[in-house]
Amino acid sequence: MKKSHLTLILTLMGLALVLSACASGVRVTGTPGLSISDDMVFVAYGNTMRGISTETGFDQWQFPEEVNNRIMFYAQPYVTDESIFVGDVANNFYKLDKATGKLDWTFSDAKGFFLGKANGEDTVVYAPSNDGNLYALDAENGDLLWSFKTGHYIWAQPVLSDDAIFVASMDQFIYAIDRKGNQIWAQEQEGAVVGNPALSDDGKLLFAGTTGKQVLALDAATGEQVWAFDANGSLESVWGNMILVDDVLIFSDSSGKIFALDSQMPTIKWQIEVPGAVVGGVVELPDGFAVASLENETSLVKTFDFDGGANWEASLSGEVFQAPVVNESLLVVGTLNGDNLLYAYNLTGVQVWSYNPER
Image (cartoon, rainbow, N blue to C red):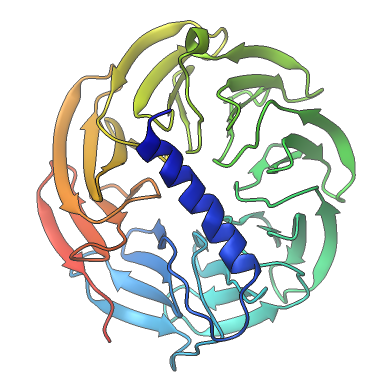
């Protein structure tokens, strides 16, 4: 692995260790957590959670209204039609009104902080925590319904199927549990799973990338390994999210290699490479996908069609650790240590606004 890529990964691991030792009021720097809807970008960063207009790039609201140095946010928010669910690094998990940012409820019984993105269905929200637990909460009032314990941090978003909830932990296991929190199966991997797994359209295969330099397909019903891919030993750690389009699995490793595999068998359909390290993985666009890479403290956003053909790219100052977020007309990327916190582009690559938090 290139030295810069190893340094990047160690930096991310160091963030988790620093945060785990945080006392109230300690400042740390972490990557902004982004999500997007049709009309707002939601950014969890530092002491606030903010709603920003996708049209203008201006603040619509912030939570809390008065900055509290005891609160810090870095988790990617989970957004529904009316609400936002997000955790902080003081072990609190919140439900906010999507339109106004007003607090609905707070869950404060976790023993660790929140860096992973939640998921939900019906009246239940599933919150992954760095105490190794997946918390199932009543979405209406925040009451704890049950929790499921793993052996390490959970940074990946839980994946939901009709039959199970799939939980990828940094203890190197992927778990399938039922809607009551009972384990169905547990499958050990060669390394930790940090990015979000992907589920096939028919719900039969679960795909995951690992820090053990593999991409795996598991039988969703049993957890048994169907295939493993390591690019003949050339694959580096897979930290980011992957997408599945028409039975083609598209993902990037940490060194910037991007692969498209037949999802039924690990044969390469095409392979390309971007300069620099990729941590956040890929995000699907209406007619292709995008990836953000980092090299020498500057970042590059590149977009491609589904056959790996290059479309447009944008160079920006700062470091990018999360994949861009996308709606039907806008791509937004968050950076650290750059000229701006957020950059927004239309889907032809024209920058339409940039954003820095009001001081």
